[in-house]
Image (cartoon, rainbow, N blue to C red):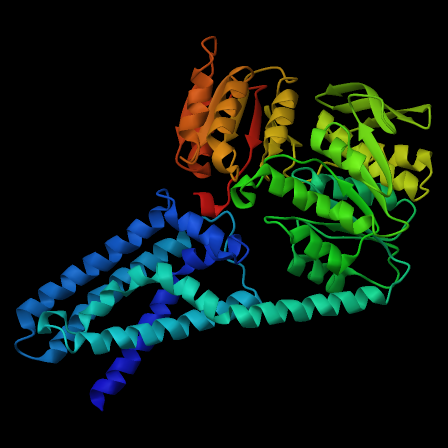
Length: 535
């Protein structure tokens, strides 16, 4: 009886420790939107040093416990328990270091995560109890102390806990979606707008919100709320009876994601900002990406009043425009389309351009920098015109636009300038960012971990990125090892390049090295900032 009580107590203590040690695994699963494919990709990555640290913790604890058992087990079986004391001490030190380390995206406490942790605790407790029972039939030297190896099992126990509660989570997700649908049906006159694309979704959403707000009460999905549960939260907590327009950003990582969101929101107006190889890692082919983005068109053209706006500077969007069977508009910064911009002049202070619509020209200015922002403005303008916002109100709104945080945001840092484009990056994104960086005088510095989620094209895209860097930047600080080799190869492939290459372990290390090389009047571009599942 005493042994049984000890076994239960040990199982509870060890389960608690394992849940804390498993913080990183839980964080990665959350960052992967609770999809095992992202978790497995991280686990397979040799750069996931956390795995080796756990193995070291387990085997160090196991070795110490074995030594204690070998020396003292002949006196009493209960001496074996003393070997666990060092295991607990080492594990607590491990946990302390884990939680004190700076994290870019800490684990968020949500109802779903709390349920997952509770399930993991139960799984770990039963696993520990099973290991203890197993140790009773093993040689005495292994008695009890085999549980010191249990942290290694976390890589499997976390997804097991996820799988166990997955059916409940899917039912709970369906409940929230049905609740959001019921609420939306209460507002039959609500103008619902869906925005998707491989890049530029959030910026276009904020611009459209600013322009439409001059005439309408607008509810916009905040930040990057673009998943089913994120949009459910928007409808539940942000949408009010007085709102006239709902702007929903729609993200996708796999085929069918946009159809799912359209079935939930039922937008009658849509924008496709552009289609590229972004997220190729999860889509597997560019055709899958194209088909998924076109799901928005398929949904909206079912509505008699459906209206679509397309980026005329993107070849895939041009194809979509040709195949779209509802009312549509094409906008461009390069050629004459339904709505287009000409005489674009980008400076370090902002951008001026001429907006051409209905054979009339309108002079516009904005504090936003970069041609890509003009494209986003045109897309938003096309929807505002469709919704009868006066052209003068649109022009005034364009003038008052403010940069979206971390999306080529210009910051004055005293003696030098910062271009913060750290939210994410794509092939189109880095080209625009480097184009803007080239406008500044003084030393040009880029801090970047490169591009990710590009699947088989990732290596070549990062080499091309490095080559582009070599033509503009004086210094390149490569953060992390994710794409360092390819970026450096790209820079060195330009024989005329004078770009100084500095490698940094992480962003904190990059900032230290940046302080050593930055000088007055320099411009620093932060291009992408990888989340913790890439570091």
